[in-house]
Amino acid sequence: MTDYRPIACVDHERLEFAALTRQRLQIRVEGESLRVLPLDIYAREGTEWMLAETESGERLTLRLDSFALEASPTPD
View 1 (cartoon, one colour):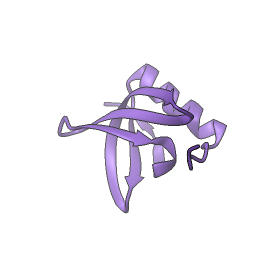
View 2 (cartoon, helix red, strand yellow):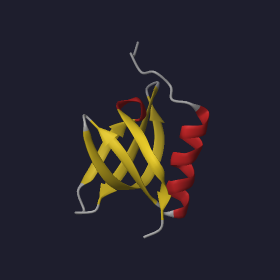
View 3 (cartoon, helix red, strand yellow):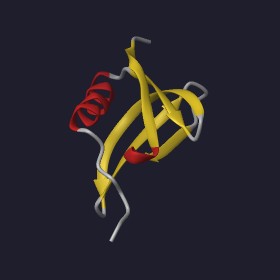
View 4 (tube, one colour):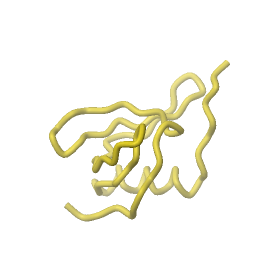
């Protein structure tokens, strides 16, 4: 069993839309603000994940319940 907490449907849709349209998002992870490009939103073993790329090109795999969306998607 997992301790994953599903995120709000509206936030999930926003993440999927950003991934499909290649729009960057501003997120907050462990107190740090990051601008990322969502590459994929997927589920594995009862937990939902986002594969994203930072502006410096670093790839991150984040649980959807481990970060907060800060602002609307912004064009590149």
